[in-house]
Length: 162
Image (tube, rainbow, N blue to C red; front, side, top):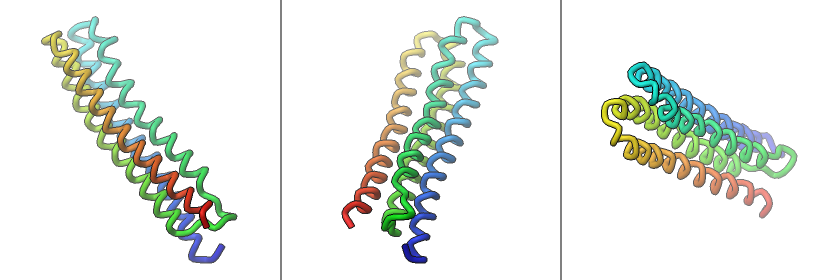
């Protein structure tokens, strides 16, 4: 492994780190905002406490998605093999793709979770539409995870082809 190939390894680890950090920031923000809405709604109607946990749980899943892809990326980084800059950049792209999607999705869950739980307290008919919006934010997170996995696998395949 040449001196310049260490840059590829650095970018690979940077991809794993950015995926996990961005995902956890999104999950933390979404959990905090949705939890705030849960507390506000729970003080008005104690029956809303269980229903208000849905967005809090959905926000926490973003961190799990980031953890899964970070492990996949790190398992593909091999310093003893011919790990090139191409591999490092593919893993960096995978991490940024998944991490940014989880970050944006976490913000969306937090905003919808906070305002949605408070709206459901006032009008119970809004429960199904709020859950539907939360499902759409989950789809955004899954899109980032799927594309990130494809990119991570493409970066690993290149190592085997050489």
